[in-house]
Length: 186
Length: 226
Image 1 (spheres, chains in turn green, red):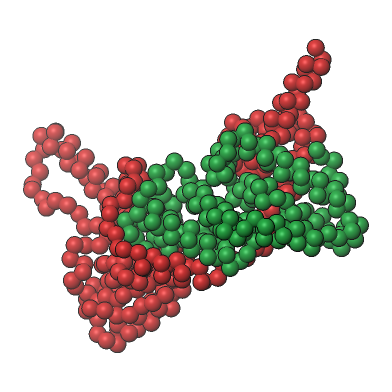
Image 2 (tube, each protein chain N blue to C red; image 1 turned 180 degrees about the horizontal axis):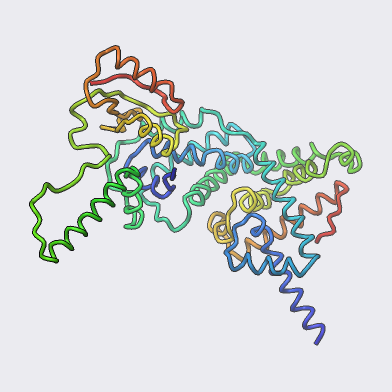
């Protein structure tokens, strides 16, 4: 059976259809939550933010022009909300939190390798990336966004999307090397 | 000369290598994907690097999937805020294509079949008239499977709220399999007025019907109504 497209749902939401809103929410809220959670690193804040994100979708549905996919539009709103929340929380607190997160995983490389398989170490290293690098890796690999879509969400040129992805991956290799895994790249 | 060629090859490899993450995620255009595939087939080092990308892709998905899901609080808060918003009845500003898609989406497969049949009949009739064949006057139009104009008057009705996670496809399946039609709504609280029988059912039959419908997992709330 064919499902209603996101664009059609947005059209119905613009007309005040609450059921269409429920369908759209059910379809996208988990991914949006995870995207926001990776940015703000706090579950309660992420939950607050997704209700704000979808309230904006409800309010702005009649302004959606269909130039991007609905999921891309929602992620753009989510990113803006998450960045605003981070600004409210303050840079200093964020830096402390990031430093703490990095320290948490600061095992001796050999001990780390002995304890965990390569996949686990890779996932740990993914959490140690900067917010900027984490974001681009998630958008490309998890949210399946094209170069053009990432450029639209993050607000950077397409060429910068490619170079940022390259540096994010390069940093990931460096972190892996520190954990005793040399990938022979770059 | 050789140096120039090596530099050109290295640049080309670098361009292709930049695309590997999107190739692994399946988000390249067909043309780009084809050139990446060709490069991978002839360049073992590039292929090795592609395996690194696929590893990153797998672990990024794994990491995100272990982040869990939000609690029901997020949805409760959202719909409380939506209910507090002023009601709106503005026509959606969809483009023509989206309006047409919306129209066809709103028709059940049976309605579409009826419509197609009616269109085919109209063509046959037109051909007959052109050929000079006299047809007796016959009643026009057809009965669609969608909600008839008098639907909200006769029969037995229930107020239904669907589970928030129910998709449009789930709801269509539920309505069709139980031979139900939506007669009104959504009203406040996401309630729909649904016709559950063509005639007014005796109370015992109505209760049995309610119980059957209630047992479907997409039903959040159901109660008989006039």
